[in-house]
Amino acid sequence: MVIELEHVTKEYKVPCKGKNFFADLFSTKYKHITAVDDVSLKIKKGETVGYIGLNGAGKSTTIKMMTGILTPTKGNVFMFGDSVKHNRIQKNMRFSVVFGQRSNLWYDLPVIDSYKYFEVLYEVPKTRFEENLKRISELLEIKDLLNTPVRKLSLGQKMKCELGGALLHDPEILFLDEPTIGLDIFAKDNFLHCIRQINEELNTTVFLTSHDMEEIEKLCNRIIVLDKGKILFDGKIEEIKKNVGDYHKVKFYLEDYDAGRDIYKEYQKKGNQDGMIELVIDKNKISVAEVVNYYFQNFKVKDISMENNGLEQLIKELYDGRGDKVESN
Image (tube, one colour):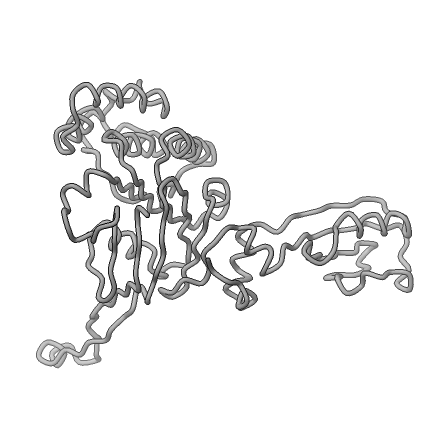
């Protein structure tokens, strides 16, 4: 395992604000907030893990404990089989972190100057640095950006350069905390494509937090859902679909409709509105093709539209309590 958390809890002591400012100065009361609550998980080398949850669920706090920035109130964090507290400098050489709202690049200097600083900071041999710079520049398509001051880069260009800097020392683990915030759809797809290539070619472990369910579904082979500091689900997307329900929405636009002949009324969400019948079908219970064939054989269908349930809706089902039976790995 490259990362392992054993019953990790993180609590914060926060001052309570009363109505009397002067009284608070001399007698401050505090309350304890639990950001991460008894979390245990294991991550293998080469995995791409999506760590998702609502705002304040504890995602960034978990990353900070994994990387040694924060110390758990309770529990243990291990990296490469050893406590994250031990041999900090050596461990820091083996992972990288990219925060979507923070920069590791010097704002007024060309990108290459920051990269040369990373070369010294991470003690990367000259030959290895030049080889990595060439490979990363080609992979991320940033060769023409290296001599440009960071302040003159677009957000998409800047994030690719941030990723490039994070990869110069061949990290075994790449932590990405909301890395695509503010990127347009094209820049986001390009960025995710680069991450996939890095994972496939170098077997780099990727730990990603994001609010974008589409990018989680595109990139990650495992997802962990956090709710109020606790793990609500840990496994593959297919497991959520199997346990919560893999729903498919089908709309039939009919020329005529006889409710007496309809054997699928239990699946109807909306019925007989200007000839439109909407069904929500759980593919774990019945085949969509079977339902579609029945309507075409028994009714005059003018048109049909189908929409698969996305990851975002599946996560909503978990939060709404329909995922109580989902078993984590």
